Length: 516
Image (cartoon, rainbow, N blue to C red; front, side, top):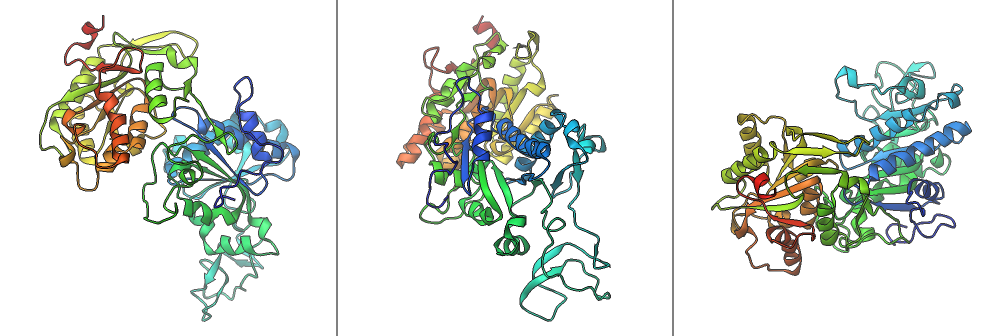
């Protein structure tokens, strides 16, 4: 289905749109429930709530199964990184805990398992209500025919003289004559009793899961009903296909216009693309006949949303009215460019570091108004309201050191990759390199990549400032794709009339006075 880019098989549902009132949860839930050995893309531009939607669809699937008392669906959450996995996993658990399902339990449990131990302080290792709702653990029995046993594996048994692949027990004591298993047991083995599993793709491509899922006798006993792939814009097509044997259906949550794959091979015919890029394309929004498009952001003010919508989403990204209830007072909110002059800067720039500090100091004297919670709150801008994004790790290190030295240790600093999925009232983006010739070898496409500009700017709820040397943009593009990429940054360098989504050049001194 995925390779041939067939339309999702969802029974009589042929278009994937919100209700007339704008609700997406129920249409998405109904669609997922009707998946028939197929897949469903859900494209979520910045701030549109794909994690919110995904967690509620998963929790409702599990809650319905719990209330039925039988045929509990089995759901796995997978992503390119543990940060991505945990983001959706935790949101799902929080939602389940908030459903107050105790009255439906009647001795039943939702079995959950996270394949990697949580490294958290003791006080954060529990969710409220978890002990009432969930049974935790991998379910592997400690005994097999009266003997101690480990997890079951499939492959060449290191304790056997046979070279053929077979089922065997891991960590089996060589001093005990434990009989070899005839195969996995439904319930104890391969998480076949787990209703919500958080894991990487390694579990699904392992020999045991691969063999069990293709076994005609018991294959369906070990397949999951759904695998939800979060950040599917970074999840390779090959990896998605490799785990597809272990599930009946795949739900893809992501956006091909945000950060691409971290590691990418070079293959022809689209084989090097992420699964979302392959199905949707790099420059298109998903069609309503192929999947859900979340077209309303809950994060960015109109001035920022307009830029993101025009440059990256074909003028098709709207905003919820709640976005206008956040504002930095004393300055026009939106996107700015702060021009600096420097030469021979490649991976770091002390001049840009200094300008970033100046901007932070200016804005710390201003007021942040937030009425999104039902009450109007005005307070001074705090260090925690900032997110400083840099193109290169060397610049991140220099910014971190300088901000600590100046007494601003709580300002968040990192590369674009660190901040995907996060937000802040104010974002400052340091481009770092003096000109195109100074960009580190092989990193020109990296710095100018539209995906990275999209993610960097769209973290901002109210105000984004791009800091850079104008010579970096004053260059002759060599390809059409480079020209298109430069166009996205050029808009940040231009002064345009008010109302076009850009507010102009950041004033060098006393911005509050200029905008009174």
